[in-house]
Image (tube, rainbow, N blue to C red):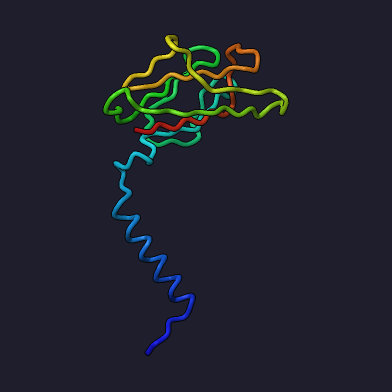
Length: 133
């Protein structure tokens, strides 16, 4: 009888888990982001730091951004989540959100805003947005 070492058993288990996950999680899995972007408004330019399935990010007004998808969503029933960071004063809170009718959500793009603690629109040097469907 051949006894396997603990490290060999762990290695075999990890390989088996990897094979199972590979067959169950694909690009169509609902837990995989359909689009994401990290961007900011620096100086007078919208800068895209990194992205996936995002064609462009445009600033339409102070604190208001339109993220256009490279490949449209299949419908408008997608979920998006975003957060804003403030690279300046640590005591200044910035919030990513959308108002009920002022910001659009279509298969081609989503509009998000950045506001200050007081609720007024403000630009941010870093906004991160993820889209799931």
